[in-house]
Length: 237
Image 1 (cartoon, helix red, strand yellow):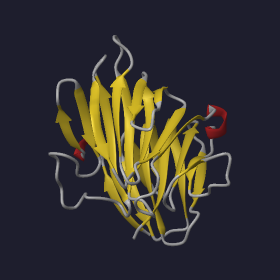
Image 2: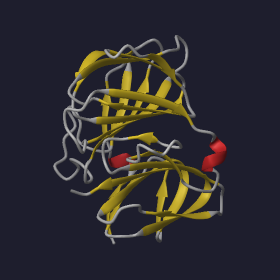
Image 3: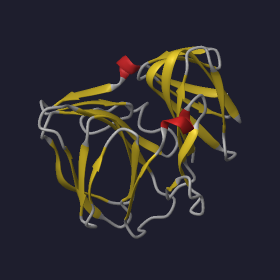
Image 4: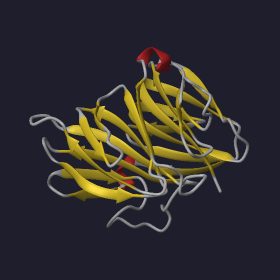
């Protein structure tokens, strides 16, 4: 087993007034040559956006973009004609493919919005751009990893991603221990502790810590207190 640990207080930080962002990997003005990516996982940003503010219309291409709202409501508009509001309990995935434009704003005029935005390099380039958004019941995450995003187009319980990648969330009660079994040989898994405190294969992690793990078939996660955990299984090459 090979591990790469990113403690919460070592992340990059940007304060733009309307946006406060923490970067697990190099992004924009934050650059650390040892933290460019984990396999084909390129970006994991933890953004807090002020009321009625946001990211104006901008382009993307050839990137798989997954957005997980943690607090508040995020308004999305794109050049494919989608106008949506994303709230906690929902997950959004967008295949930028050969190119699209979109904007993201805090839908509220009074409350902050906090979201994770995650970028993954695609398996096939220049595909038709695509958007999906879905609600996932918390019951499916209770003391187990619920897979939300997968490469299986035929799986009606997950959203499709253009990569051999899997996104799973778990809400683990204090004292409980669960496992994550990797789906594909050669993949690694990046675990991000959204809330709480956990022990992963003997190492302790707290809120917003991350750990990348390679060369393993499974990992165990034990909660020291009620915890909310994201696992991103990703090809390493």
